[in-house]
Image 1 (tube, rainbow, N blue to C red):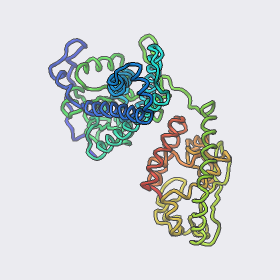
Image 2 (tube, rainbow, N blue to C red):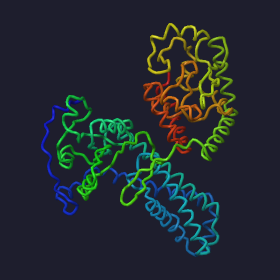
Image 3 (cartoon, rainbow, N blue to C red):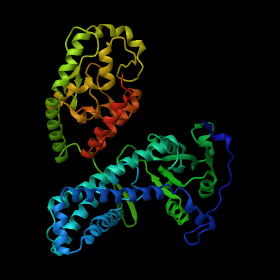
Image 4 (tube, one colour):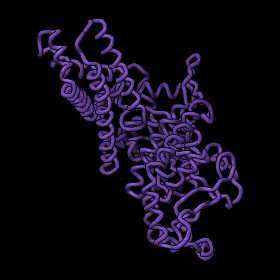
Length: 504
């Protein structure tokens, strides 16, 4: 932590750029923060190889298609040129046209994968049109379908692996990221700092704060990065080796100031981002509506009803029913292990608060001795978490088999019964015990959706998180949920369960 008053305040330097000339320093700054160039090159190679591999597999699986194609063209080399050169190049061009290589979408969020899928649909439409227009015969529809679908799956898999590698490099080595200078009032900058550093895989690394509300407003306050005041922002970026300026909150309130700053950055290679005071609101809910040159941010209401919710309910019921049928042998084995460990019921049913405040009994495999509730009073002062939950890493009330069930999250599987009955969802805020009193303030908003077997809280740290952080994540999910987001959380749950992160 650093103290603001350890830095010398220099008088502001008037901007030397008004939108027309560019300095020599600005031209040379284009070489800074170009991690995305080798990364994009690697993606191009992976995508090209994926299409070639898919075409080869389709040819081997449906060799008769090539024969018909060859007979029509009377030149076997033409088929190989189309299948292993022209079609992969067409994939690259269409993906590029769909901005699937745009660095703004690489390495974070679902937008990259959405654009790849759109590109795959465009490729399929293009191939169908060309085949119809040229009256190409002899081709097996199965081979074409396998080639296109296989290429799409392989491209998505390759990009997923590339993203994992990029995130690992960012977390462990601190490379392949953006060095940010935050500009604004100190509270606004610290809020943005907290938000962007929650996910090291995002690659956003604040290196300095430039406060706009004067030195006195930050005197003596501990900060995680150096704080400056009264400096020329571009000179400060050069001094600290930054490549991104993040304008926070009210720093962009002065008319024309943000536009002039954008002019100054033209040709410099320094990125400009604006962090408005819209915390915990996902991108799909925010739309820009320009009116007479004024960009207005329109924030849509959360989706708490409609076709998407019906699709979510249908997915929950079908997945829960199939899951229960498939897990019957595992349930029998776990039940036998519990009965051998401690005489008593196999299942533990506790009253929980669900959707819109309705109570229900949650199903779980019993992991504690039968007298656990009586022994709780003597352990209250050993609670290792805050808020409305009681947690102990080494709870003496948990028997050995129960400890394994908790660490592997197998004790939660019976909640598929609650999902099948419509009391819970696969993804949502965790249901809280009904005897913890009334839900006041922001916590009540968790009750707008059905509680889930897993959720954003669980994949972000589980029991290692504080109560306030857990509530924040739950509220973020309530306000920004979508089917794609649910699938993403389910996928992340697999990794969290395997590494047993925060499970006790």
